[in-house]
Length: 281
Image 1 (tube, one colour):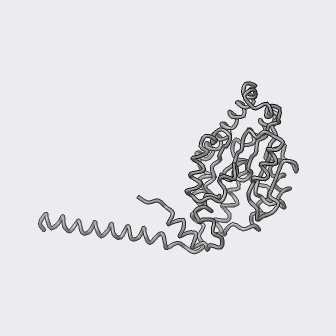
Image 2 (spheres, rainbow, N blue to C red):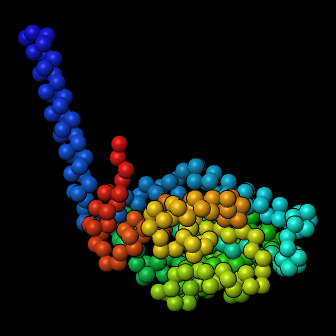
Image 3 (spheres, helix red, strand yellow):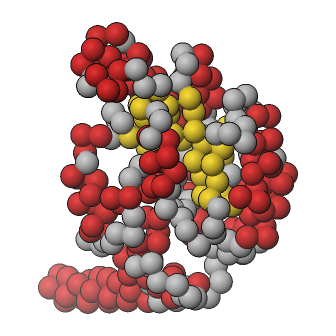
């Protein structure tokens, strides 16, 4: 075989291989099992097994302590408007994936190919077995020791309240009580804004901590992916100062935004939407 013929033949083979590869990659976006939650396993393992996740959690709470110490400084108080100077301080924290780690519940659902459902979620809460997010207990107890009031504002449902308080107290959040653990009263109303406003009516909120943008302001709620990006950019100066974000790749409003907040989608439809949302080279 001549060198020219060999090169031409090799070129045809490579072209065919590339065509097969890209055809398979394209088909993979559509050939998704109808009821598979394997896509969550990487996120769950990252939270449970990676040192990087722990480092990010510690980083968030170390930063929160720095910001609180700055606020406690008398020089900072003098810079506040007079009406704010004597108001008691408060910190508002989300619960799930902010101070309590629920990854075992997500692991159970992924391993058993189950979607999120209230029955299993309530059962997990009743176990009172969620562990604290690294750094959370030390920071919040430090804040309490400085006279700061902690408000645990969560979208867990009100029937979960006692189990939630028991779990919080068992892992070291000794101030958790019926008074400052505020769950949602109506399951169909997820916004936390009224509860944040109720805190702000009496206290000066120094920090808000959460794993979801909705934990900080209603400016992020119900927004498309592009709108969420724009809202983050607009509020960029607040992150790391007033807003402290904890990592959570397992679930959240970010995923709802990918589905455009559509209800009643099948798991097959969700899988196709996720695949089509990927940015490729």
